[in-house]
Length: 459
Image 1 (cartoon, one colour):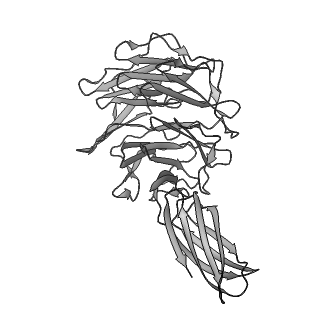
Image 2 (cartoon, helix red, strand yellow):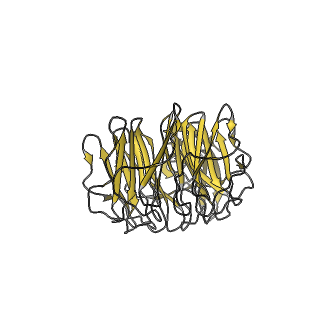
Image 3 (tube, one colour):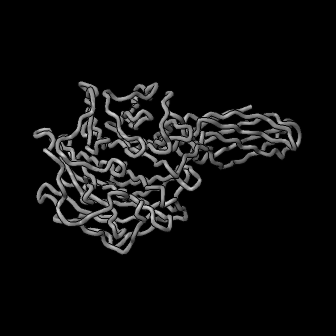
């Protein structure tokens, strides 16, 4: 039996490529359960990429995407979306303040160069980032806050290509284009929901449906909760009838609210359980739904480690946040965690390290292959050590033993211990021997309680 566990520690991705940890962020996308694609703007202002496949693992190094286009690595971040397993579409705001794009297909590979989207609309490349969403394999929708502080959009379809230009969303609401960016989510092929913090520091929303088009104006979400103007809303649709929102409060706790088709919006935001706090002036919540009954959240903590909490339909919210396994630390003042769920049993996390290399860790299926060895130890007493490896990391192990001494009749010391394996699936159980006479032998059985796999040994 296999269970899902976290990798024991973070690791640097293969290759020599380095990126600006003080200004750049990794964008990650999973176009299939067996594929991961990463993007970042390099120190040469070109967009770079690497990829992972289940069959071949990680590429040997990052590579620059084709073309001569360059973008502002100090302020821009790549938006990437996979509208189908054989398609990747990228977007970024250029030095000319226009929105630029390139794409990849499994038939033709990468386009030869980036191109500007149709129209005359421009956006502030120093403060704005594109929000891109694929509500179907044949539709793309883009969003940004304009110089006039209104929300703007454009769209693409296989039938008609790109719209002739961006257009302002209906309504009179305005938002701070210098500090805010739109969050967009498609909970169904016929639904789009947008979120942003208003000038009043309340979260605001608007929506589109294929039946009714765009709502006539933006509206504040219910409740009195306000957030720091530097915060961004994280939104996830775990089903077509549910939306969950997250943000860091001014108290440094993570807050949430939700919507359901049956009951509408919750009456107000609420803090998630636990005592953990995070830097609300620099960190933003990353949220993913790996299944309809699961939510996973991530942040960099004040200790610069990656932290997480989770919700399940069966058990609700975890009682508190927990640090991801390992000793690796990252710069919470400049970095955000990029997380992707390529399958219900997989989470992959990415960040740029202090060494300017891209780092990763993951949560996924672990097949236990336990093994143990026994050895007698005579140091400050007499002991038999049971040393185990290959167990499910950070999970309980039950060790039963029989130690016997020579003589007639022989004497036996029987017992059972329960302990927890470490992050690498190892443990050491030191058993104090109380028998008289020399130890003639011992046998032990260790059961990995997560998988029920068993290892035996004797000496």
